[in-house]
Image: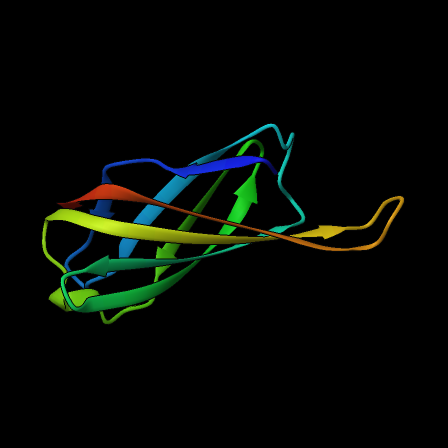
Length: 104
């Protein structure tokens, strides 16, 4: 999975949950990939999880982002790919980017 990215804007709902998705370039489908991410805004950080779907992924943060506001934020991602053919094992990938949070 050479390149992944966050799609912006992300949606911030009334309960403080961020709904986020992204695309994966060069990986084909992503069913064996676990996505973890963090949204950081000022001194607030919330964790999230995502699942692969086709050539992309989507996920949500834990509750607790009530302190997040609409506006710019930093998104940091981690993907863990389970290799089950040829050589077995795990590969990890990280990335980060500035995103925009929009109130739902």
